[in-house]
Amino acid sequence: MKKTSTRLADGRELIYYDLRDDTVRDAVDRRPLERTVTTSEIRRDVLLGDSVAIASHRQGRTYHPPADQCPLCPTRGERLSEIPDSSYDVVVFENRFPSLAGDSGRCEVVCFTSDHDASFADLTEEQAALVLEAWTDRTAELSQLPAVEQVFCFENRGAEIGVTLGHPHGQIYAYPFTTPRTALMLRSLAAHKEASGGENLFDEVVARELAEGTRVVLETEHWAAFVPYAAHWPYEVHLYPKRRVPDLLALDEAARTEFPQVYLELLRRFDRIFGEGEPPTPYIAAWHQAPFGAPAGFEGVDRGDFALHLELFTIRRTSGKLKFLAGSESGMNVFINDVPPEAAAERLREVASS
Image (tube, rainbow, N blue to C red; front, side):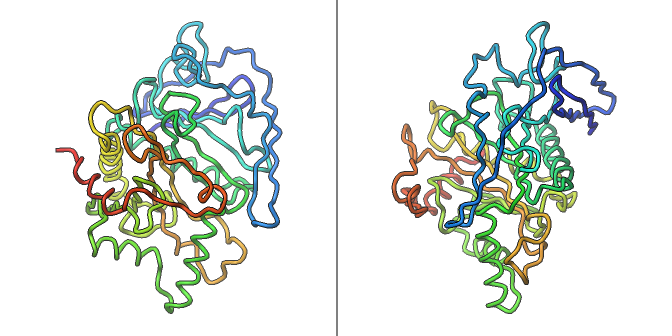
């Protein structure tokens, strides 16, 4: 992998990740852009104990442009885009309309491929491995920023999810706090460790799923994928490395080598859940990594107790129907799932690649 960092016309950082070591990146952003100004602010909800990002500048962000005006495609002639070069393998750049910025953290865009009509599932194993390298490198870099406490790499795919740019891409959020979902995991982890005399809850969850087997979707030498016992979403898969590590940085070479094959297979199965002729399955793919530093209130839990894992889920519950977060889910955060986890796992095994 070769990494090349440059600056866009408005001062934002852009980084190329190339498969070939001899690739030269010297294109200049020719757009007449003024320096980016953001108004991101973090406000604490004292009743719920969580935080909200207020980012009014995002109202003006690009919204469903036609394919020939996609800002994530490479620059071609006088059609200028966010990527100054005429081609790329993987590229990461600071979001022009960030939810988090400055002392409030940082937001980045990750373009998986220059092919506008592709998806992550269309990548080769070599390309998927390069994306993993980019995620890992950005986690390492962003975790060193003074304001950052947690790094979140994720992909939203599909207009139903709320994606406003069709080009295959993901994002990275570097939060200045530990996210509420991670805090809940840490709380459960700490309570179980104390009650069990030091046992790890993540290890027990993975071991129990593999032993029971009814919700296991895919198992290899270094990875395990299963539908969780209390899945929130109609089709939801959790992917764990079998050797517990707190973040992407700690993955060993064997797990890294095997990851592209495993992850691409899961994504391709997701696109086959609802049968032939269906539009691509909308999904969210979310990496859960341990916070950097020691979050307050979780004494007794070491950073190494956390287990890196990826959660992949879709909001489509059946052909042509979506799972909406209505009163119970949005109002009280109590999920109601229409698809039994065992049935979801069986379907995901049925659509395995031959």
